[in-house]
Length: 463
Image 1 (cartoon, one colour):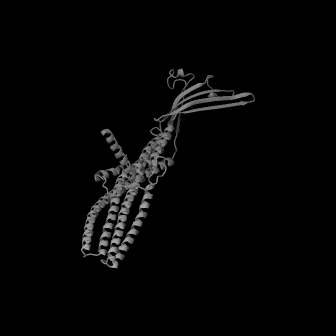
Image 2: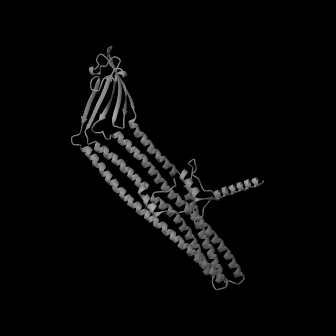
Image 3: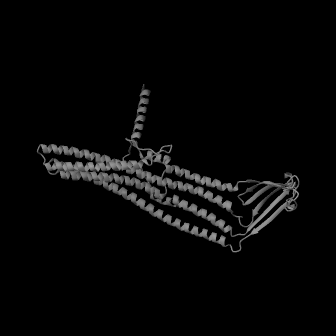
């Protein structure tokens, strides 16, 4: 029986927690939902695929290639030639291209240099760049740039998520502040209506003049107007928040009635270390992206500089009728074919211009990086100061509200003993009301300022 009681209590507690979760959308629940299901978060993850596929394409430059060629000519009953060739070429990271070819040719008018044994001829060799392309070539440059781009997409993803975090945080706390303001103004309307009825009754009994009923009535109308404005603000904030809510299928969600935010005045752990945040600026996604762009330009500079060298390409092929003969003869003794290709422009104007242009791009990008770094540092300092100032203002206004509530309480006591007026009480109430509204707005701004401070340092969602 004790076990059943404990089980029932546990189920009741669980149901209570679920009900509360359905009624209150906490900031942590909301921000986690945004992180996983918002389209921008999905796009940030998709962005990584760009780098992966770019790298795959670059690696394709080193894929072995099969090739084949068949050429035949028949005329007036004569076979002029029948040429067959097939093979494989294998590029390597060392800049050496390996090649294997099998050719079989025959025909009455076959070119003498194409004559091979009747069973065909096998050639196996390599092409080596001894000048341009020895240290780096187009394939290796493209592959290295693709690797850099893959890393760059990681930083772009983080940048997307950081900006999403700030936007989503702003929407939530504005929604929370507008809801708390709505509740305060709703209470103020109820209080004004109760006072109006009490003043009316006092007037009927002859205790208060008619002008006091007018004063009480105008306060009711004024507060109804402010409450209606707050309703508009809350609906607008709710609609803005809905744009950040999406389901697992990528469909937009709408807030349903009965779902409310957590109190904007509720304390949150906003711990931060100024020195640590300042140290993070050097690793900001914007800086990392610029560094990757500089690294890519440096690869381009190396390839442009390589093009100033002359093309010196050596080709060597060992020839044999059967595969088993490859080990029978040393290089340049028998059964081989080799050659050298040398080429270079006379003035190198195109190559020098290309290298100069790339160097100019690097200088431009480096200056841009230095400027961005200073701007990010200045932005972080401004956000730190803004967050600190809002915290101070929040403390000041908390103390101010305590004082305003004390004044209101004192004014009510004076009114009860006939030493004050309804006008003064209304004035004191309006001051307290305005103070509470400002306090909610300050609390929202401070929480948003915290998110902006993290964003300025280059962080956002917890990964």
